[in-house]
Length: 212
Image (cartoon, rainbow, N blue to C red):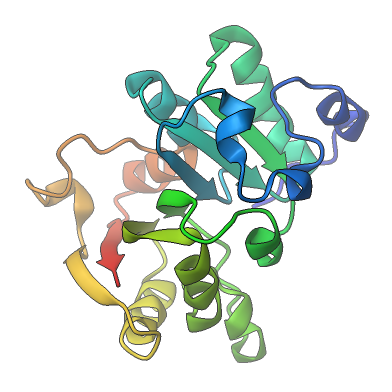
């Protein structure tokens, strides 16, 4: 669900020190952006930023990059950062299709996908973030021992995501169709804004962790 357009959101983002304005220029050298060689984890489609800001605050020894396509949504995350001032978190406004032009081979240690757009029409399947087309992109930027974690409340999208794993050459580490009642996978779970909303309605949350 997209937020209503917020007047001036693009201008605010363009002037924010928390948003990397020329991400393509940093391919293969994101460690210089953070000023250290700590692992880099990314969230694609971070929404308002609740998940990744919480994660970054809990893990100062890890660098995080949140990617969001829509300015009006990213603005909310920027506003959170103006209060939190986390040195290990940066944002990028971009389309996820371009990630291989932004990150170098093996540069990313872990990738999170949370409540991604389901793109329900069949002809749009390749646009879904857990599709085999995107899994091929993740393969290029992730380190050999990296994991992808995916959460959604959309059963059809989750079923599709599971079907894509093997053809894309990935393997399942863990999977659940009811995250909040899974004692193992729910341990330490950080909820997104959408996750809180959906779980309050009684919707089960689906999750997988996959690797190559």
